[in-house]
Length: 158
Image 1 (tube, rainbow, N blue to C red):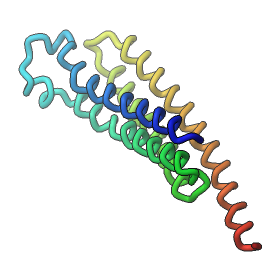
Image 2 (image 1 turned 180 degrees about the vertical axis):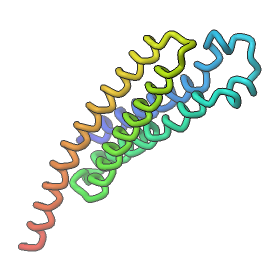
Image 3 (image 1 turned 90 degrees about the vertical axis):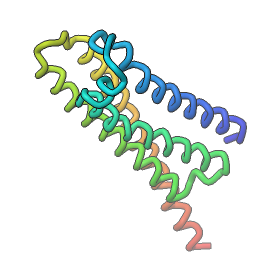
């Protein structure tokens, strides 16, 4: 893969990460119940918001490992155990994100005071995207693992 292509994709991943971080920090100020709240009340008196921040950690870890995989591709080292390990981590992070979203959906559904339709729809969308990413990462991990094994067998016979 050309170095310019991987650099562009790495730049896109950084933009996605910065956009997600900005949304995580900015969105709580837009909620109706936080209209007249102080910064302390917004960030330290809402356990669901704290849960959302903890649940976003796998997303950012997966972005970091995606950045690493693209770095390996740019150096023509994509067929390496390190790339396989990064893909495995992306798969695990996507599955962890599905777990966090599922628990968050249960919290939303148990809360009787709010209208849950929007939150549930967003959770389903995030979970679906995470499942697709986990499946793709698992497929690429399997393919790369087979390629690494073939490469090591070939080096042993030569």
